[in-house]
Length: 230
Image 1 (spheres, one colour):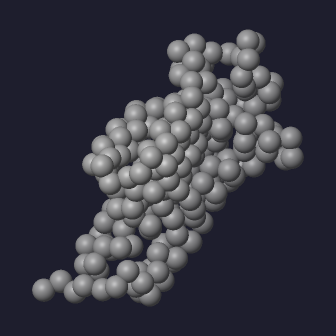
Image 2 (cartoon, helix red, strand yellow; image 1 turned 45 degrees about the vertical axis):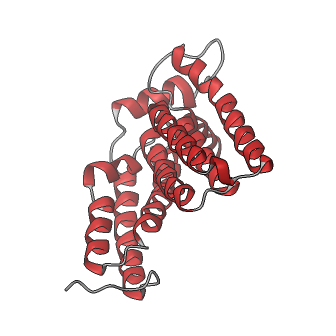
């Protein structure tokens, strides 16, 4: 019979730290030694170096992942045109991604299942390699992992803090990569379903808070919808 354990599993914590340091070191080395990719070069010359990221004069190109372009510009001002420096924000985002996966699986009660699921999620080479490039995919996946975390937390405990953090993660994921607009739509659907499930149990203050948070999030999506349309 598979052994069940508490959520505070010391062995799991130690293995997680070791695995994180191993993968993070690999990503640092990859970010340092890997030659610039075509898309990274285009992002640099079109958006980071020129500082034309948004506005009328910006080049309408899918390489303009907004958060990555802004962070790349910030790193360019401090370190110059060194691609390793431009990749640092994305490499650091791996820590956020890894932490999000850890938060999702740590409550699993069966140790073997927990280890296998965790390893399956954090050791996909093709996915992890995105964290070694100055692109928006790694940043987006880092925030997406927390979308999943707060979706689970919202389902288990539907309070306004979990809802706000869910929508903040959605907004940041879209800011990193517009492809996460679909994830945001799914998150809205989940939030509405849980809201309807508890509809008769909540007072008018909870209803008002939910609708206000929901409306503010939808308004915050409008600039991304316009940018996507353009």
